[in-house]
Image (tube, rainbow, N blue to C red):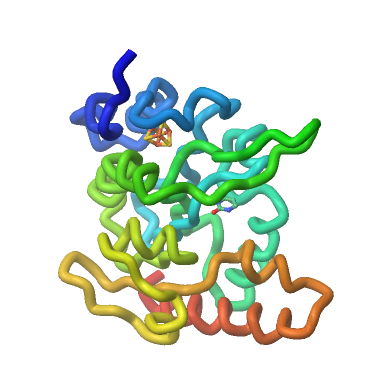
Length: 206
Ligand code: URA
Ligand code: SF4
């Protein structure tokens, strides 16, 4: 089978989120679908004002089929609560919808998606943006920032303020997994506070 360039052939015309999610289960837009358990599409509904975009599902998300249900999701939950954003009123998704990992014995080790995976999966994100039309998008981490802004950026240079992008305001921040990696170490409190501060920039749009 020759490889498809991106997800376009699998994205339906419909902008109903249920239709999009069902169709995404069939996506073969890149090779990541094959070793993964299932697609992890999104959670939240079309009336959400805040769209949060992560990198890709992790191990737990891959098993449960829901984004941000694992340890990074708990960091995100805490940060959202502290920033005054109701998680249930937000739309949560990822730049890449299948878990990319390397199998080592029984463990599945997270592997960062390549730019080509982000590009292949982008038609889904475009469809979600059209379906939800959020008032603000929060891109968490460099992969999400690339997917949302369409260019390679440094998170450290863009975070801390609202970017007035042509389609809608965007806030770029650290990925909650990066905050999680500092847990129990110097720098955790500061990293967590930074995530909260960036989420607070999005709160007025909620
Ligand atoms: N990290 C992400 O980027 N997305 C998830 O859904 C979970 C962890
Ligand atoms: Fe399709 Fe995205 Fe999964 Fe690749 S990662 S198969 S483009 S849904």
